[in-house]
Image 1 (cartoon, rainbow, N blue to C red):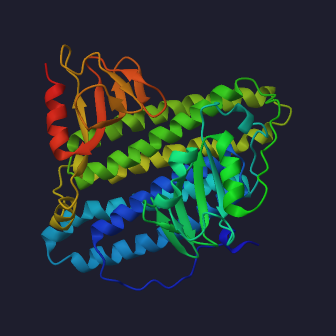
Image 2 (cartoon, rainbow, N blue to C red):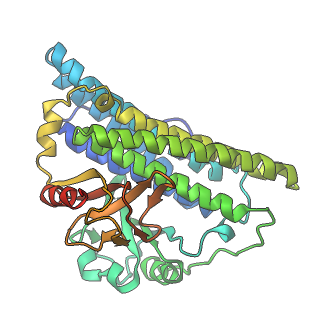
Length: 402
């Protein structure tokens, strides 16, 4: 049996004097990659991606232990214990997300049951995520991402690298791709095959597309993708609500969780109806687990932001670390008649003099709109989740006021 599919790793973990903030940021990045990889493994029925999820899950276990050790060392009095308790909740929630992602990956590895034609039902705009081992003779080997300029040339992004047991998350321009690295690539389907072949030296086989044979499978897959994106956003906002001590962001996590619950309920109902018409209902069993695991992830996001919602002060060690970064995530409500009312947003960039990028819009009449998936026109009453510098955020808030 593959050791990754067995019991938890027994690797010894010793205390290291590390920044709590640094560990929390790495846990956040790991959680987001786990969600991305696990859903991609299911949607593309890719066992290699699923195995990377389990490897990353082991990494999260190590991070969790180190975070707990650091928190225990930081407690000096009852006040410290009170302020660090919510941070301990963050650590536990990250572990819940990791476990849920592992359960999603096992849908593929344990062949729990999935429609064969899920990939055929993916929207044409959906990007593909693939895994490849860097060949020593590849033109990409031993070069930095800036030198390769892969995204500008092909639209393909290197979202992570695994070098043995070491993970390089969110690699930057100066990151060097080395031979034997395991590279995770994301990008448009027409380009990714050529890049993968150039990287690995192996022929890229495009998965065969079959007739779905299940009514409304395309709509179900769209729902899965939307649930995944909302859950990922909820996790991002939950961490940001803690790092920036923002009750407004924590409240939006609650709103996202409500939306995911509603989608999960409808998705589950669709699965049960589809089972009645399917020749072999067992092929849909994995979808039930997928819906349940998605709900676990959004519930964990609530747990991350619980301390903020309960108005418990963030421990100074976290506050001091946050001040090192000038980039923040903000929540802004657009007033009717303001300079943002009627403004177009294309690829997250609003058509105003601002460097803020809009991540998502919550429109009371329509629910959540993820602007990475579609362009939009802002309306009075919209709640915007945006990212940018503190200076830009202040100016953006002024634009939203009538």
